[in-house]
Image (tube, rainbow, N blue to C red):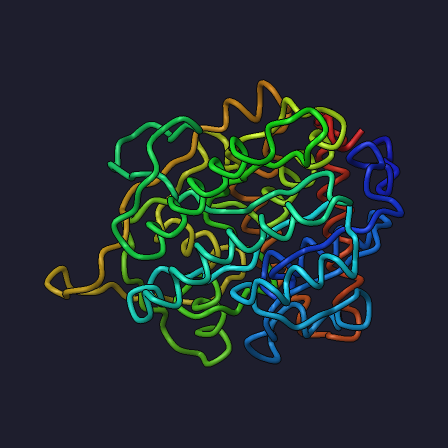
Length: 370
């Protein structure tokens, strides 16, 4: 029989009783992070715009009643600084962003204002709040200057980006590095890092122009899913995978400044699959669904065809590693959407998935779950 982990003791029990502030907590990843922090015994504060709609994970889990929820725009520096001052958090995660590639083509100004000045305002708030011990800026795998080569990008590879979203994330990394070396390089200063994840999927994501939400919208309406780029290969990972990396990184930084800097939290080396393979597996798991391809002649905005992260640094130094294989990622994701059929038990199902994930990590002898 498997040994059972004490779920609240994960991450060296660093979060219990601490004030943790999350920007972008109404978003997909932010809402899951807030849920996990609640589960770890943290006193959670959120600063974000209102959720997009009533299907968002934040709304359906009724998180506004479970955390300290504050509506604000990260572009408003004074409001953000005032909130930091009022909360006096110890650990902060910055997830507030314009997160969509196609939307960045439609509104590049909003994308750059949010994804660049939002990061600047975040670190200014950190700089002016002495209580903050650790600050993590969450960016994206798309921050790298993607040459579509077959090997993964490492933390010391060049930043870049052809589309406005990717360029904004490359800039966000440069901003983080600048603040690290200009303001947070003294022994007693706040410890900061950036974290880059792959293509994150999981229950509760209903954003526009994302393949998995589009698939489940097609399931609801009984229509065929249209795949823009069926052969595009991505580092797919369940939302809990990078979140475990962020939480582990922050807990390590809390006690050791050597973990400052940039980190990749992606799937294993053989964890990249095409869009078509992802949907094929989802259909096989659910035993329903279909899709169609676009014509090769269709003109569409540029999106990368091949993108891969090298996670060697996180594996060798942080002792972090992915927990789920591709089939488990599909199962966790599909089950997460299926749980939304009963909203009365949804938050319990979300917390159960966190426990199941933690148990799998514990069984694999992964450091943060011990």
